[in-house]
Length: 307
Image (tube, rainbow, N blue to C red; front, side, top):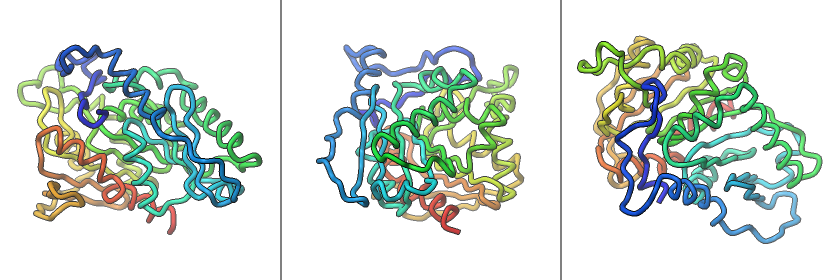
């Protein structure tokens, strides 16, 4: 359900919630938000395991999921943390497992539409509060856990709204080592150039600055996108904007992707900045991006963190 009803809400640069949201018949935005939050709670709690390397999972209030695939032994030293915004844990957890990464995975589903994620991280302290909560839960699960070392932010679809507000503060951007965006980076257009679909550069500033640092190898910034056309700047257009800002050319491709209906059509790379474009302009193509994240984005992070 999370995958199908993917519509972006705020598109922050436009100021105000999108009027293009597609609500299924008889289902309000609030009801869909409750469904979204319930996804985490629908996961079965694992049976109590005492082995130090046994996987651990905690579903916290609001459906937030904390997952430690390699068990408590893996957090006795400072651990790496991946925070994923928006996406069913039943898709994100297996992708994390497939990547071979150790550490802690936190999954947050806050509602349908980017507005829910933007609102949650508007307060200056919100990101630090999140890290504190994760640390607290990890210590409850594994007493004596050492604390967070490196941090990566991952998102699909509307979850980019949280990443945007986190990166918009310099101290947070410095703290975050990697950003992975799966088919989800939307902004508005320049007010006087909407007809020409010119991406709003001010709204892209936080991402552009992070792309600068990734192109120099200081950070990791990896993006995948489908070819879905939206009334606001699409994920193709925002990815192209970043490549243009970094003077990176798209290399045309025609390569089978990790899922049967995924075809990679382009890529652009410089340093630790990576952009991969895929064909597809319908909801299933958008959802494929989430389910393929273990093949398309997490490997970049695994490679960086194991250098």
